[in-house]
Length: 329
Image 1 (cartoon, rainbow, N blue to C red):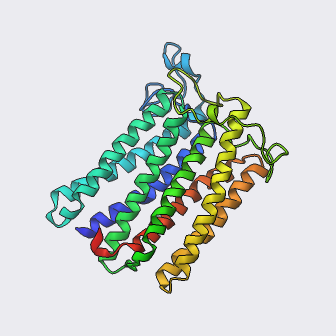
Image 2 (image 1 turned 90 degrees about the horizontal axis):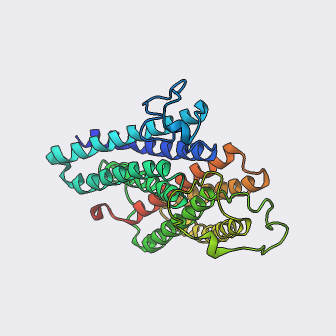
Image 3 (image 1 turned 90 degrees about the vertical axis):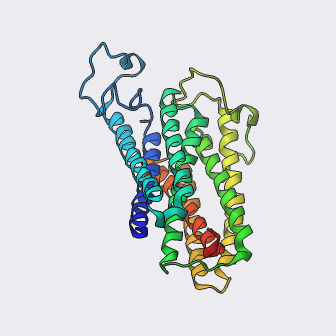
């Protein structure tokens, strides 16, 4: 039965990664409101070829089939992920051999339900930045927990066993926290359409410290009824958000490189491999960030930037796995 749970968790983990990448693609191609209602699209569970003039959603937004399909495909895959997590919870609660997974699978189930609500609010609250950012973080949390499940279940079968290096545990936890904060800044940058507030690199608008309004840029809640598609902030506020993300990237780069080097020099083969993976993904991520600025946010590069951020987080979860002995699940 453990093998069934492990296989379901593996499929769910891959599905979660696909959902995150599809979500980034949907958002970055301006299709987040391709369907102005939820959970259907103009009242249908599939994108209609045309919409009757009496449909109230037409008054909100005209039908654009290409954008609507991007949004609905994202919803279909997300629904599949939710179904897989329900299966994991049912397995844990109906099989005595999986009793140790009941609390963990229940947490996952609650999270995926809340993630679905965030997805609904993303649409109904018209891409409110704090909701979009929380939706991204929720997806990454679910992905990380599913990956943790896979790692720990595999380890019980003698596959990729934890190195049990407790000395690196504080560094691993700190690295994960810092990366999550940086990803949050990235989500805030994207949801406020501030990615191109600085069109040059390494300077911003031709100077090292441009005019910025941090107070305006970091107001989390601005009330209801505002359509945030395209952004609503002035240039100085968007510049402040962009520069905060750049400064966060420098801090994250330094810390994660330090952690990766410590893992590489630990003397343990599994930690050495993990350190190499962290370094490679970190350098790729920085390169993608710079490319987004230099080439003015090309869609494939911007989507890849989101995907590699998720992989980088998983590499740090792997490091955490190697710091926690098997009997500490």
